[in-house]
Length: 352
Image (cartoon, one colour):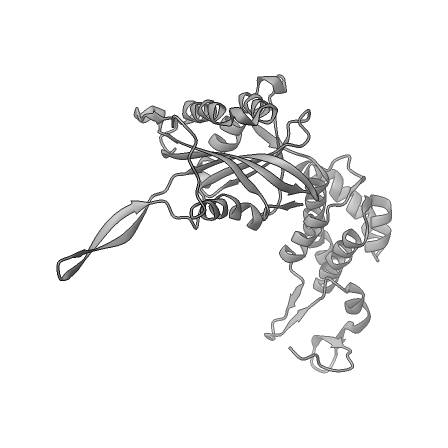
C-alpha cells in the first residue's frame, strides 16, 4: 500500500513533446524548473492525486527479449544510481516519448519528470520517479481593468484538477523490473503509453492475485451459484468469500472452499468452472498466495451485496459480519399469496 502525503519533490524537469507524424517539434528545457512555496503544493497534488484515488494495480518493466533492452528501465536505473543526473536523463525520456508519438490520435503536451523522496510503500520509505503528461487545454477567463471597464479575456491552460497521463516508478524490486503505477485518463491511446513508451507488463503479486481471484469468485457466484441456488445464496457466497480474505493472511484453496461453500455439490462445479475460466483471470495453477488487504478493501466497495425484489424492496447484506445474514435472514414460500418471502429477525431498529 502506498502513502504519498509526505512525498517531497526534489527535482522537476518540464519539456514538451509534439506528435512526430504531424511534424510537431520537441522542446527540451535547458535546466530544471525552480520550484517555490506557492507552486510546489499545487503541482504535487496535481501529480499525485490520481494515484491516491486509483486502485493499486502494479506493473513492472518488461521486454520480450531481455529487460536490459527496455530503454525506460535503463533510464530509471541511471536516475536511481545518480539522482543528480535526473534532468539530463529526463531529456532522454522526453525524446523516447516523442519517438513513440506517431499515431494521429496522440496529442502534443507538456512532460514533467519528477524525482521524489519520502514515498511510503508498504510502510517503507523509498524514492520514486514520476513521469507525467498534460495534453488537454481548457479555456479559462482572466479579467483586466481598462479605465472604468473590467474586460474579460479568454485564455487557455492546463487544469490542475485532472492529470492526463502519469506513471510512478518506485525504487523497489529493481532486478524484477521495479514496481510501477500508471494512470491514463484518455483510454483511446493506452497502448501508446503503457506498451510503447513505458514498456510494462502486469506485476503478478499478492495484490494482483487477490483481486483476480475475488473477481473470479464474483463471476462464479453469478454464473453458477445464482442459477443453482438463489439470489440470497449468491450474495452470501460473496459475503463469505470476502470475509475469508479479510480474516486470513494467506489463501489456501481447499480451506477456502470448505469455508465458503455450504452446498457440497457446488465444489465440483467450482473446480469445473475454474478449469474453464481460470485462464481469463491468470489463476490457472493458483491454489496458494499471500492476501493483499488493500485489494480486499477495494472488493468490499465494488461487489454488490443487495437483493432487489420486484416489490420495490431492497435487502442489504453486511460484508463486515456475514454470519448475521446467515442467522437472521430466512427465505420461504407463502402458499396463500403464492409469493416468496424473506423473514428478517432483529431486536431493535438501528438509528441511521
